[in-house]
Image (tube, rainbow, N blue to C red; front, top):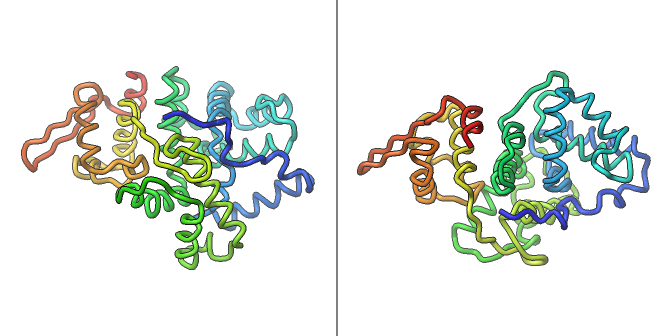
Length: 289
């Protein structure tokens, strides 16, 4: 996976918000987030923020305080952004995605990955997996992007994502009252985010990229599914989370064989499959990378 950070999925946020005061924009965005938390297309607008996310989560781990992190972002400008709004916007979005509790310091498996001095491709795939858990990203990926990939479609267009969203718009509170412009922006920025994470490539018409997910990232997903209470081989292999990575069940079986003896114990005899973790938990797994 090769991130495309030179083309941010969120567009030019800095210049695009210059008409209104920072506080007004911030309050409006927070209000929007609260009203459509279950399924919010705005997450696609903000983009992937790969480098910023890594920097902020590592700094959060070092400081062990969200308030201290906020001070570093706003007062010391560790993100090197030119406006207060842009700095706060990135911090707010990264926190919404990856920091579960602003009041109490909490370490997540993703934070441990980013602190483990791993290769960029391992970090990026683990980061993408957590990013794709957002309800909007998950919905579009599972119900639009993966089916297109599975049926052999070579490329996808923003207009096609718009059509998909319009077809389901009345089914979700977070989409029902959105304007055409918001839906169009969400579709465009969703595809740009998928490009930034390396699943797609190209400028206008996005083509499916040829990707290889590193063994460590496959193991990370397996252990995260165990964390979520999925504890059978069939449950792991058939889980729809793999579709977020554009993998089908046979792909998953092959990849489990790749990591068997290193991170898991996987056996398949006829129709019987067995899958066990070699490490007690995800923290121990990451320490073994």
